[in-house]
Image (cartoon, rainbow, N blue to C red):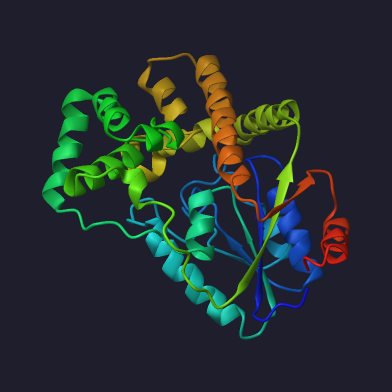
Length: 305
């Protein structure tokens, strides 16, 4: 297939399935660079728990948006969209192909399709919701979201207070369900997109997740969590792998329980990732063991590349 514009190859799939390795191999085949769309790997203070590519992997192909921000900075998906598009503009001046990789479906979609437009929210509404969270806990906000927008509640990570508050502030200011603002018309882009998805049997994914968590603990994830513990209220740290260990450091659970919770919550996260990506009919799916060379060969045989 001949592309009329530069091509962005998006490598997607659940966590721990091998996206980083595949993205690097594809980038090497096309002699190009990689945009990371993993929202947890932006932060330089978080290394082990976010499975940041190793120094050898970073040396194997140029990467962008890896540990380029601080947990003390406010950084949104809209900011990423703007910066990623600017990076791609510069990259496409010298390359015909670029690779984007990540399991954060919202961040991938922001670059490829553009973000949906939402009403402006007065700071008073956001502050009121934050106060309600502090005084009444997350459960009351979860219940409000479920009552006012059951459709969005079913797919959002309702253990993430930032996501719950974001939806409720839009609902309160507009009087409409948050889901009614989603899936608006795709924005025009200066590149074409080709999706490559990695998949595996559920048991394989879960086994790889469990092994990865064990490896992280061996590599010093607990020490990393200890260093970040005093900043545990920051939004960037409301993420799997850290929040469970913070509970251990609080003295509320045993370490063995915390590690088990990391594995369980990571498996749940992988399930949500799969649900998100399976809704995209444009993704070409391959078994996680398939080599980059074979994937490119098959895409060419299908006239997809």
